[in-house]
Structure formats: C-alpha cells, structure tokens
Amino acid sequence: MQYFCPIVQTLEGHKPSPYLPPGTSILKLNSNENPYPPSPNVMAALRTLEGDWLRRYPDPYAHTFCDVAASVLGVPANWLMVGNGCDDLLGLLFRACVNQERPIVYPIPTYGLYRTLAEQCSAPVIEISYPADHALPLDQLQQAQGALTLIASPNSPSGHQVPLFELRHLAESVPGILAIDEAYVDFGEGSALGLVHDYENVIILRTLSKGYSLAGLRFGFAIAQPQLLKGLFKLKDSYGVDAIAIHLAAAAMADQTYKNTCISHIKAERTQLTMALRQLGFQVNPSHGNFVLAQHTHAKTIHDTLRHQDIWVRHYHQPKLHTKLRITVGTPEQNQQLLKAMAEAIPPKN
Ligand SMILES: *Cc1c(COP(=O)(O)O)cnc(C)c1O
Image (cartoon, rainbow, N blue to C red):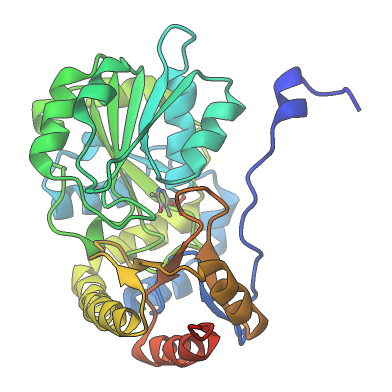
C-alpha cells in the first residue's frame, strides 16, 4: 500500500503498553502510573460539570489552569502553555525545531518517545550515551549543536536527576532550545524551573500523569518565557486540550497538599523497594522517579515469569538495558506482592 508519504512507510511506530480497564487484577508496574487515586478535589470538580461545559469550545489558553499553576509555581500565567499530555507538547517542540541543518540532540538511555518523534518528522538526530556515572556529557551535547536539546530530569529509566549547574551550563552553551522534561520532578529533589527566568532558550515540561495520578486525563504543561511560547502557540491545535481536562487539572494543581502526601508515601516505598530488591540480589541505583531500575543477570527470565503471574514490569530489548527491569513503585501492598513473586521468579544459582 503506497498511499502515505515515504517516511510513514518506513516508520516502526510507537508501541504503547496494552490498555487495562479499571478494576483489572493485573499488577501493572510497567508505566509509572501513580498507585493512589487523584485528589478528592479533582473528583469533586468532576461532579460539578454541566452540559454547557461540553457545548462550548474550550479555552485555548486554559486560563483557569494557568492562573492556579502560576501561583503554585511562582511564574507569570503567560509563561505557561498546556498540552494534551506532555507528549503532545514534546511533539509540538519537535515540529517547531526540526531543521535539516541542525539535529535534535539528547543523551541516552532516556524516554523512548524522543526517538519516535524525531523519526516521525525525519529530523537528524544525535544520541549521546550517558557515562556509567550518569554525569551529563556536556562537551558532546554542546558540540552536537542541536536545534533542540532534550534532557529528562529525573531521567527514565535510570532514575538519576541532572544537577542544576550542569543544566545551567548546557543552557548557556547550546545554540538552540534546551527542553528539560520534568515529568518526574515531583519525586526528585528541586527543579530546574528557575532557569526559565535566566535563559530565553529554556523550556520546562511537566505532566499531571505521574505526580498527580492523572495519566488518563492527558494533561501536560510547559513553562518558558512568553517569546518562546509564542512560536509554539502558532503550531498548537487551539482546542487540543478539552474543557474537562482543563477544569480537572486546575483542581488537581490547587491541591498541593494531597499530591505531596502521595509523593511522600511513594518516596518512602521507593526506599523500601530498593533495599528489598538489593537483598534479592538486584543491583539498584538510587532513583529520583516513581520507579526503580533493577539490574539482574536473569532480568528477562524474571520479567517473563512475573508476566505469567499477571505482574507487569518493564523490560527493554536494548543492548545496555537488557539485564535491567524498570519497576514502578506501588502501594506497600503492591510492592509486597511484587517482592514475594520476585523472590520465587529468580532462577536458582548453580
Ligand atoms: C510519562 C512521561 C512523559 C509523558 O507524559 P504525558 O503527560 O503522560 O504525555 C513525558 N516524559 C517522560 C520522561 C515521561 O516519563
């Protein structure tokens, strides 16, 4: 079939994890969803919605959300832009920056969507491997002269967080945009948000999917100086974020106390899970996300055994990651269930 343009013929396409309907008995620890329900504030806001919200087109600028987020984050409301998930904003950024003269640049391993998006828009790409200690390869990133340089911090799947001074250095030394993907910021230490005040080429990306338990809502936002956002607004679908999402996202953002409570539970469980996995013989580095990356010679076998018992963890078919499993931190009960099955899934040493 030759109906589409040549790139589409060659694209592999992104393969999302299979959808599980609510109430499933499968223990799904492969997508870094938050195990706790969204804030009661969100559920209350959902019940107040009336037909008129749906009859009209939504606010393209999502003022209700931006006003709340601006006061929480301490930035002007016009430094914010919303998207249909952080992925939507990433897509926008790629389309805005793609350029045959300058590449899209990012260190790996990282969020797999970056490569998919680059392929979709036929962008030249330079991927630079992180060294074993996860120090940011600053010289190589700078030498790559990217139109768009992307850093996920905290990063997935490694779980490490890039120090602020390294990001600052990068912001100063790249010729193009520096996008800092803070999808996991709520589980880390501090943020790079302050850099948007100092650098006009920095854009911070956030999502409500992880920290706010709202992966199903599809809501992300970006923070940058208005001049930079202005360019992105030209490419944005005006009504890409629906009225319900804007309303509920504002309610979620307004309830920082609830979010912070969930986060502190997850962080405490992350410590427990890390120690328990080490005792089972995994090598686990400290994580700043709501997941851990656990290394074991038999990672693939363990993954497959767990899968047969309806426990899903993430395994990567990539050279540097094939002995590793990325495991989302669940509730204490879920983590106990995982660890029990894990202990039995590890092949005996011989
Ligand atoms: C989950 C994730 C996203 C996607 O966020 P959505 O708002 O759900 O689209 C973006 N970047 C990273 C690094 C992520 O892990």
